[in-house]
Every structure is written in C-alpha cells, then in structure tokens.
Image (cartoon, rainbow, N blue to C red; front, side, top):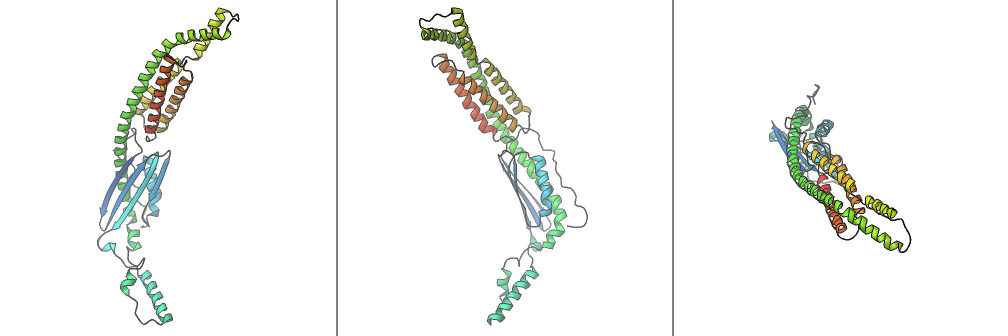
Length: 315
C-alpha cells in the first residue's frame, strides 16, 4: 500500500432498512478494474449471536478489520459466511517468481552434481512447481489502497442485497406468524367462554364429591360451599387468559414495527408457554368442559411451539 492514508470504505446505503429481518439470505456482488476483478459472496443462516466467518485472499489481511466492522454495523445476529474472491486478468494474471524458480534450479543443480546426473533441469517442469507461476505480490501491494475502496463498495452492495432478501423472507414469516397469533387469540376467546361456563358446574361437582367423601360426618353447609368456591377459584384460568392475550398483542406489535426483534419475540413465547402450562394445570376435571379446556389448551401450546420454530429465524 502506498504511504498515503487509505480512503475510508463506504459503510452505509440508502437501501439499508430497520425493519424485521430473517437470518436466512444469500447475496453476491462484483467489481472489475484494469487488470483485476473482485467478487463478494455472503451466505447467512440463523444463529443465536453474530457468528462471522470471513475468507479473504492472501495479502488482504490489512483490510480484514475494516470489513468485519462494516458487516457488524449492518448485521446483528446470524451465522455469516463471507467470501472475497480476487482475480487478476490479462498480462497481470501471469508472473514468474524468479527467486522461487532460482531456488528450485539451484537445488536441482546441486542434486545433479551430487548424484552425477547427466540430464539438464527441465524448465517446463520447474515452471509447474508451487510458487513459480503466479501474480507478483508487488502488484497486489500497489493496488491495495484502490482495492480497499472497491471492496468497501462491493461489501455494501452485497449487504444491501442480503437485507432485501432477508426482509422478503421476514415478510413471509410475518404472515405465517400473524395467522398463528390469530388462531391463538381465537382459541383463547373460546376458552374464556368455556371457563366461565365450567366454573359453577365445577364448584357444584366439587361440593358433591366432598359430601361423598365426608359421608355421615357433620360439616357446616356454608363452610362446605365456601371451600368448594375457593377450590373453584383456584381452578379459574381468567388471569392466565388475560396475560396470554396481552402477550399476543405485544407479539403482533413487534412483528409490525420492531427491528432486531428475535430475542424479544422469543421471550414473549416463553411467557405464552408458561401461561398455557399453568392453564392446563388448572383444568377442572376430566369430563365435559374440563376435557374441552384441555384440548384447546394443548392446541394453544402447539401453535406456540410452531411460532417458536419460526422465531428462531428472526434477527
């Protein structure tokens, strides 16, 4: 690189978006200058954190920290495989490393003398040995400052394309998750009606059962009714349903307006799962309304699990 300070790479783009993004995507960009070309490829899949794997050609090491910074400014989570390809074209693509060739020839001459070999070294064979033919390092060093600017533009272009693909994927996920949220809301509404209808019946069944267990024992009827009412209260799922509906509304809000919402959505799903588990543990009885409440509760849990699978791919 020349002695002058390198120009900063471009790091932003008008197409950069703050909307909901998937962690799955692919993008590629190319650039060509006199005598060389660059290609940047990015593949992204889901990961709990930013897991960046960067592969660059030999000699590009001075550019790596800045490239990593550009990527981190644009991507927060996901497993990213970023590959930079660099190729020389035309006469610049072929060069002879004379120092390496001379070392091979010197070694061959020494072996000829030591073992009294008559034949002369084969130049064509030496040309095929590792390191003899290739682009001279001086060419890369002299172009590194220019490469830095072009690579920065390629990286931003690739990240723009990656963002567009991840946003499109997120739109599809948003539609699927919204449908599941509507299903959970409808099931919760059914449960509210069913639980209200089941509560008096459960209290009555519980009172009858307690009388059967007590038999001839004397007990204050008002105390018996009170205990039955308390047991019915403990089986009430109205609070769980209120919190579940609240989580559904928060979830919907994040889908519409938030960026980098994956961790928040995952937390909400944990809370929704907790409410569903509590609801099932309080199911009143194994007949009639109780069985129906259990069935609906299990269906809600199933929808939450499907949402969890989809959220794993949201940044």
